[in-house]
Each structure stands twice: as C-alpha cells, then as structure tokens.
Length: 184
Image 1 (cartoon, rainbow, N blue to C red):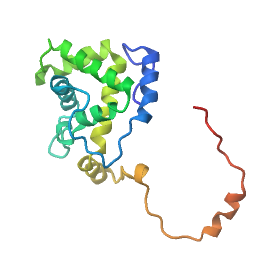
Image 2 (image 1 turned 45 degrees about the vertical axis):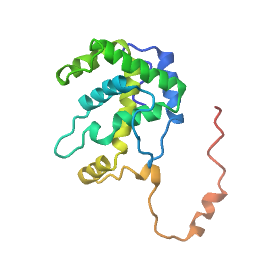
Image 3 (image 1 turned 90 degrees about the vertical axis):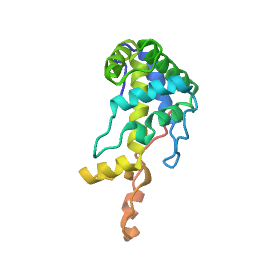
Image 4 (image 1 turned 120 degrees about the vertical axis):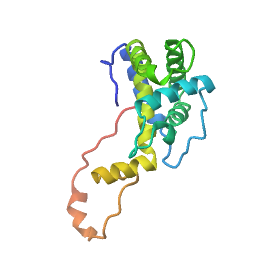
C-alpha cells in the first residue's frame, strides 16, 4: 500500500479503513473501464487532470489519459461504499482548490500539493488507484518489459512451467503445513 498512518494531513483510522478496502475493489485484468461510474463529468475531469499531471506520458510511455487510469480509479472505487465516498471527497477537494473549475495544466501541481497537504489519505487513495489503473494497461506493461525484462503480468496470471517429475515433491508433501488460517 502506498499510504499509511504517517501520510501528511490524514487521519490514521481513515488511512487504515481505505487500505483495508483495496482488496475488495480489485477489477479483473480484462475489465475495461467504460467511463466514469461514480464521478459526474466535472468531478471526473478534475480526477483526470490530476492523473494526467501525475503521468503525462512521452514518446515511450502512454499518458494516464491514454490508459484510462482515472476511469479505472472510479470503476474500482465503485465497488466499495467507503472508497466511493472518499473518491467523491477527493474530487470535490480538487475542485475546491481550483475555485470549482477544472485546473489548468500549469496549476495542477500546486493544486495537488495543496490537496495532499489537507486531505492526505484521500489523495493517497487517488494516487494508488490511478497508478494501479495505469500499470495494468497492456501498452505500459510492454514498455516495462522492454526496458527491464520484467513481465508485469506474471504475479497475477502466473507463468508456464516446463513439465517435471512430480515425484520429486513427495518429501515436501510429507512436511507439516507452515501456514495457518488468518482471522478476518
């Protein structure tokens, strides 16, 4: 998680509650955000402006707008009442910091800094969801793979293994379990 109780301007309880909700809002990899579900047009534009300021893109990397990162954040938050309300509050804070207008490109950084200072947990939730949406995009994953050799989808989809002699696992199967049931 990108944020915790030390996040500037945040309530530790709110940070913890928002963090716990992230596991319940996961969208499948093949889910393509159709548009904004939670945010209206004005709020969606404010969140999209923030996303584009954070990830403007260049000749190698697509921008946040190209990947639908803001729409992903909205669609993901739609799956949790707590996150839905938090995303609306974040968008309202962005609008309030710009005088209820959509922020101009030059002032987005100043607006983002002001909102982060005053609403740390909300801002960090927005960042987390925007970056998650961005790095799920296939074009971004291709750039990551080309530049680093890392396959970003492996942790989610797994990788193909060559056939092997499964009898080699018998000793491991005889060992006692090293896991226990976690309490929820």
